[in-house]
Image 1 (cartoon, rainbow, N blue to C red):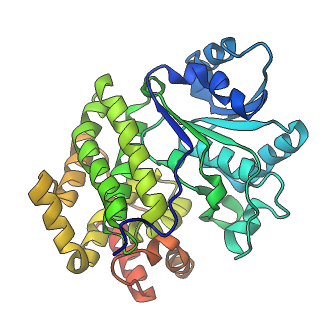
Image 2: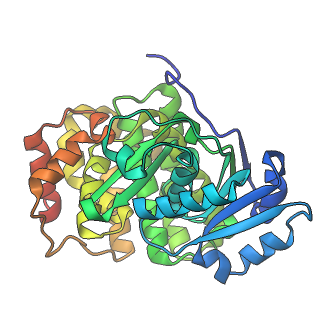
Length: 372
């Protein structure tokens, strides 16, 4: 087995330091003087956006774009693309959760593409390279999108949640500022942290994992296991650990891909509206049971070396955080479409055990019924 992935893509620069976000505009000066900052509402409410703008160099020209919450939709991407076409900034920065980062990443990457985001979701067409330098600063510890070449987008009209990707989508600059996690609601901490842990687990057991990516996945698993509950309970000292672990898990999954949990999570999330991280956590028991024969050695190694039992750890978090079975009372009418989307997912293709249509249907039923 090769030590490295066939293609290694890393952010050009990563800054991990409390307060670093206040110097974003200075750090971006090397890309040009005209920038656009995409952000969520909390950045303005907290006063952090104003503090950032106050430190803006006199010669810089900045505009801001607020994402008002929810999943990043293809419609929102097109609206932001239109703004970028009008303004023609020298760089784009996303300061926010995974939705903000994916929205800005897709819009910046597709600004001069000939087709829409919705087109590239479902057509096997070549995406042109991104031309705008992209900067990412996460305000949640979860998706790891600041360290990937992927943008996950939702199309409400088609009830579709699917990614687009290109090697050029890797951020040029990543800012990991644990101060950005201050005031993050506990429910968001929980969902984001569960997502990060399961991303680390799935990239660890992926059929595309290499010694390099497994080392990253393992680092993230151990750090999240020790840090998620303290952060949820309000310990600010855990913020930097969770933020860095989420970033490292993102690097791992960007190269190793994931597994059937994430293959199921996108169609389930699009149809039920349940938070992505919680969807992944609820998918874990059935998917782990399905894969156990192929990954038992990996599970034993994690338990022997670090005392981590993946399934027991997630169960303990769900109990401690009082997270209910969000699928209770929910059903999927278009099960055949959900199965097709699961099988079409690159995450499912990376699963350590092959997944058939019958397997996908059985897993969807087990997840929705809370069984293994």
